[in-house]
Image (cartoon, rainbow, N blue to C red):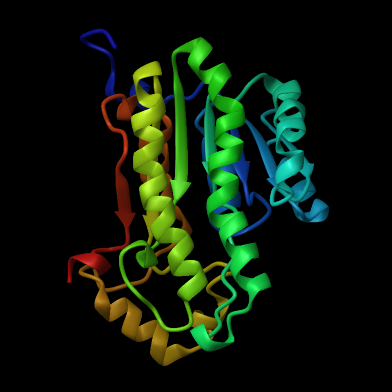
Amino acid sequence: MADGVAPHSLFDLTGKVACVTGASSGLGRRAAITLARAGACVVGLARRAAQLDDLQAELPDRIQQRACNVAELDALPSLAEQVSAMFGAPDIIVHAAGMNPRKPADETGVEDWNNTITLNLSVPFLLSQAFVPAMRAKGWGRIINFASLQSSRAFPNGIAYGASKGGVAQLTRAMAEAWSADGSNANAIGPGVFPTELTAAVFADEDRTARNAAQTCIGRNGTPEDMDGPLLFLASEASAYVTGQILMVDGGFTAK
């Protein structure tokens, strides 16, 4: 970056291509729209075709989509080729797809465990691995994983999810060590308590929602727009010298 560049241009994604998993709802959908509004061409991935159609309708010139199950690991190399055929190979990959079975440890079965680890931890590594060669060839890339409050704290009924998100924190550091020297920075966003499909049960409990808000330094739970700035920072030239980090976007929840 040359001296004298206007600060706002640090966040301009014009000419960049992004891929967002879990793009049909929640923070994944918000991420896809935010990146597109910042100038990127975006490919959204998720299982639900109707919701992806609605996403594409938001910015049809900049958003394409493909309905798929990213947890089908053997299909990821082919999926990476299909994504790259839309706008070109992605410069930015956002791993927002995730699941949380919310079961006590004694009731968490093999299927619960394997499905959670596959989607939350294996997919971010293997899909990124498929895109990294093109990032390396361009000398520029941004990998953005989704960590969690449970990356460092234990919550009730969260053993599989917590294990996967603890893994995401270390995966992010290992990705940075492996790929940042070639220009592909890897970081993670750690959302606090945000209203999404995964947290619907939490927000259905008014007392629990209030306790979560009180745990933050700011005094409220997150809203979708709270994610926009941190996401653009990690997806853009603004984070050129930032890699291997977990940026907690939690209103200070983990500070108390």
